[in-house]
Each structure stands twice: as structure tokens, then as C-alpha cells.
Length: 369
Length: 249
Image 1 (cartoon, rainbow over the protein chains, first blue to last red):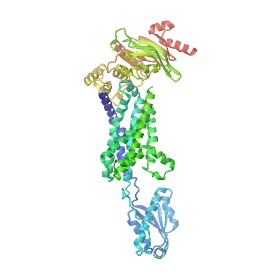
Image 2 (cartoon, rainbow over the protein chains, first blue to last red; image 1 turned 135 degrees about the horizontal axis):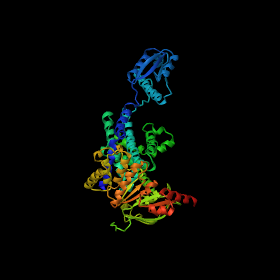
Image 3 (cartoon, chains in turn green, brown; image 1 turned 60 degrees about the horizontal axis):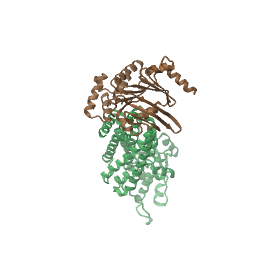
């Protein structure tokens, strides 16, 4: 029994190491994905080009422009001379934001209670426009008290925000847990469903079923190498996150790895479930892409915030395993919590896994009949 | 499973398989002698695949009884699986494994010990004249060789009986001839061959032939006797006459 199982695993390893595409997905993809998310998808602005239309051209307006420029987030690309020049920058894409300073800015600033400046943004990219406005608005409100030394109204509320667990608002803190959840899903679920579907497609599955190997052993033999490899990938991503993007692991590392393993089992059970209902590799691929990858990427808060989704999507989000795994990862890595704080999520994942395994087992038996 | 000389390797009695209301296999009965080449014929949808799946332990019969190499098809499918060989109509070797690795893999999953696997591997390589190509990937072999190799691999654990499901589909007549020579060799060694085919000329090579029509076995005899009974010159004609009869009823 054990020997037959080993022969099977060995065969599976031959398949993996001889297929360049599989190897690329196994090791190239996690690295590429972490680096792409790390360097390309950041929420911070660095050196973003803006245009300024300065009607005032006085001392304070120049100070404000310098203040904004000195932050390093923005670079004043062009000083416009009239309103008519504004649209040109948006059209040719050289800027996404124009800062309009009204005439008489200095006088208004120091004598009147209300001073207004205008921000005009390119609304065709709403997310970007929003963030830009927030950044500049924050800067302007910081600029004000610096200049106006005496406080006219002593009862002002000053908001001081501190971001716990991620004080620098590093986007890596969000995408490293998300990437682990996604990669483990791709490898454990998609790759296993593909390799099982492949045996069905080529007809070797039938020969295996006629052999004395029990169906459970066939499935176990197929998934074991992938389980080991996806676990390795999880460790690889954690290391990349830690050393390249300085994402900490504040909680217990053994607990983190154990729960990674649990999630791998969840993903594997999903993969085998998909393979029992797919006849071909293409079929399995489509099902895992549409049924697993897309929802896990879009609906788990990895890319879009859950709180701003319509209610129905928020419910769908509750039935996606990755949602719970990302919560577990963020809890242990960033907030350093211990097991009791993630017990609920662990419980949900375990229930889901059991459910998937039972359904898989039923489907598999029906097919054998 | 010690079989007496005159005992049957396969004994089937009123074996039936129903899918809902549809009777795929309708109370078939037949016996197969040791060392016999038994041809299992029938048009597509006649029920021969379903019948064979019951014999090799992949499908549970709805009613009836049967034994394969002394084991009960209803209660001992696992014991049957250990003692039969099977070659599917789709190609059953792994293209991305070498010839040697394929033989070892099948030896491994049939639970052979290391020494036996090694011995068997050399034996198969020599028999098929593949010693120099042993470390080549199976994908590099011509189709004819692949099929002969997969036949040899299906017997790696020395089963008393081998089930061949349309083993010569898609290969040219010359390769089919070579393949049948291999089948003869094995039968002379005393191994029983249970073969399904839709090439009627191949039916002539079998010791006995059964022809399934609409889930029932309509004819079972030696090719010669069948031709005499139906007044036909070839198995092709026998088959056509049976098929026509099926349409009239």
C-alpha cells in the first residue's frame, strides 16, 4: 500500500519537473506576482505631475506651491497662465490635477475667515482622482496652521490620525497576505484540478481505477506533491514579503504555517471537487478561473474594500474561503494575535473543507457507479 | 484462486445492469476457458463496455452473478483488480515518462517488490526490443510500439487474464497484425485474453466470439461455427445479419 503510494507520488513528481509550464506557474508566478503587486500596484504617489493656475502670484501662493512640491509626492510640471490652458494637460495626459489659486490669496489667507482654492481633476479615472484630492487637501490643511501663527479660535478640533499596525500605510501589508491566499488557491486548487482532469482526458485515470490502488489513494497521490509545493510557495512569499517589502510577522510563525497548511487542504479539496465535475483540462481551468480566482481576487477585500460593496456582494464574500484566510493572515502577521482571536475563521475554514470533501467523495462515488 | 484445468476463468450468470429504467446489459451468461482468446463484439451502445466494466470491478451489477479468476464480481472487486490486467482503448501510458519509468510505475502500483520490478522491466524491454530506447520518453515512440508496450505493461504483474478494450483502434493493418501475434504468444503461455473490437477481421482470430445486440448476447461460438450457422462467408456478414435482425424486432 505504502509502496504503491510512493510509486504514485514519484510519477507525479516526474510530471511536474518535466513540464516547464507547471514549473513556471509553481515558482515563477508567486515571485512575479509579489514583485508586481509590490512595485507596480502602490497606493502612494511619488513625483506625480500636476499643473498650477496661480491667479494670485503672491508670496503665500508661492509658499503653498513650494510646500506641496517639497513633499516629494508632487511635482509642478507647468504653471498655467489662463483657464483656457487647463484642458490641454488633461487631454494629452501630462497631468491628472490642476490646482487653481484665486487672486488676492495672501490677503484672504491672513484676513478673512474663508479662503478657497480649487482642485480640478481628471474624473475619467475616479479612484486616482479621489486619492489625489485627498492628498492635496491634507497638505493644504497642514500648510495653514504653519503660516497662521496665532490661533484666532482656541477651540479648534485638531484631528490626529494614527494608523495602528501599519503606520506608514504600506500597501505591501495588504497585498502580501492577499497574494499568499491567491497563490495557494491557484496552485492547490487549479493545478490539482488540472492534473486530475488530465488523467481523465488521456484515459490513464481508467487504468488507474482498474488497478488495485483505491480511489482515495489515487487522489491523495495526486494532491500530495502539490500540497507540499504550495506550502513551500507560502513560505517563499512570506520571506519575500519580509526581506523585500519589510512586512513583519508579529504573531507566532508555527501557528501561521499550520494555518497555511489548513488553507492548502481547503484549496485542495476545492481542486478535487472541481476535477470531479470537469471532464477535460479546459473545463477544469475555466471552472477554477471563474469560480475561484476571480471571486477570490475581487470579492475578498484584496483589491476593492469590502465595506463599499453592495450588500449582496458582501454576502458572497462570506462564502469565499480566501476571505477568512486573509483575515487570519492579517491577524497573525500584522496584529500579532494568538489563536483564540482567529478561532472563528479557522472554524469556518474547517467546516468549509469538510463540506467540500464530503461533496467530492459523493460525486466521485457516483461517477464510479 | 487455484484454478483447476477445466475450470473457467470467467463465469457469468444472468448478469444485468440497469441505469434507471434503461437495461444496458440484459441477463447475459457465458464462460471463458483458461488460455482462450475470447472476442467480445457488439455495435456501439450494445452494452459491451458496460458489461466489461462490471467484470473488471468498475461497476456494480444490478442483478445476476459472476466470478472472474475465482472472485465474485459483486463482493470482491478489489481482489479481481489485483489479478487482472487491463488495457483501455485510450492510450494508457504516460507520454512524459520514459519507457522504463512507465514499466516501473505500473509495477509499483500493483505492489510488486523492487527486485521483481527490475526483473520484469528488463524482460519487457528485451521482449519488445526496446533495450536501447529504455530511457526515451514514451511520446517519442511510434504508435504501434506504444500499443505493444502498453499491452506488455498491462501484464507486468502476471495476471491470469487480460482485458483489452479495443486495443488496435487507429493503427494500420500491419501493426494490428504484429499486435495479434503478441496476443497469440500470450495465449499460448496460458494467459486468457478477453478482447473487445469492432474490426470484424480481428474477430476471425479469436477462439470464440460473443456478439452483443441490445444488451443481450445474441450469438456465442467459434468464428467457424458462427459462419456456418448464419450461412455467411465472413464474420462481417454474420455481424450484419445479426444487426439487421435487431432492427426488425
